[in-house]
Image 1 (tube, rainbow, N blue to C red):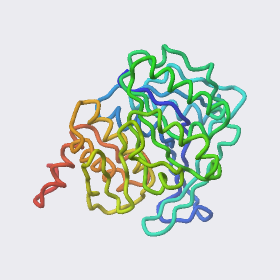
Image 2 (image 1 turned 120 degrees about the vertical axis):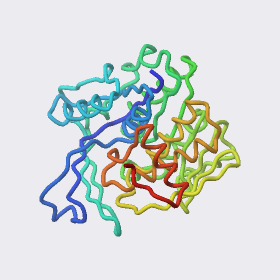
Image 3 (image 1 turned 180 degrees about the vertical axis):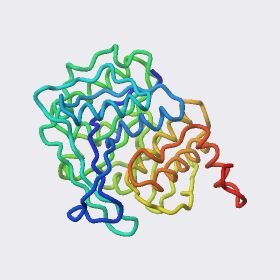
Image 4 (image 1 turned 30 degrees about the horizontal axis):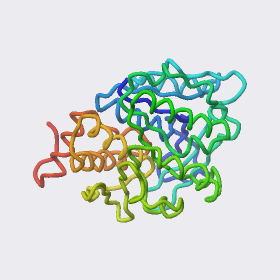
Length: 304
């Protein structure tokens, strides 16, 4: 595997566009999960990806695994738990007002992730291991499992990528600072928004790895290079950060300079925010190249 990710993948039920969650009568089934989003993005861009995690022995778990496998993601090490459910996410989608997101993940199979379930075989040969701050915030055992994963990644010689991905519904700021901030110092690449860095009390200049900072004006920068966001109509911003990480990491795996990594990251994010769910807009390599060409040109953008 080129890439190994570890986290919770949930069944996403997305309300019909523009309809408030409490009024929606039809829903679109999909998948949600920060790490699985990154895995899907990298898989579509031609990288071999493996997802480590847990699902319930239920229809939602089977659906999640089917969708991951359809993306070509390796799920051979997934634990199917007969005693805990697969996490569920309900949300609506509005281009011009706040989006209502509700997680049903307390006591989920993923929250039972334990360090003993992670073995050297799972990351052997991986060039990159990616995880987010969501995983250690799921439970005490999931926190210990995250620490174990980082140890295994180091032993395997893999690059460690980390995104705090702060979700305050999982815990108060002080718990995020206690559990997640120290993990950023153990990563080779950190993706973080300015607001997340402030909440966690982390100075990106003090991180030992490469800090990729997402600014409030939607631009991003690292190592003295800055990339503006591409101007596109935004249908739904959810999943943009994961898409950005996938685009950047794809460039990194191919040995591209930082400016290319940032440009491709911005392009993947721009494609994803034009779709209602987290993954439909993720491009393959040809699609990304066409998008980059279109962003750079003011001429014909129809691919005939």
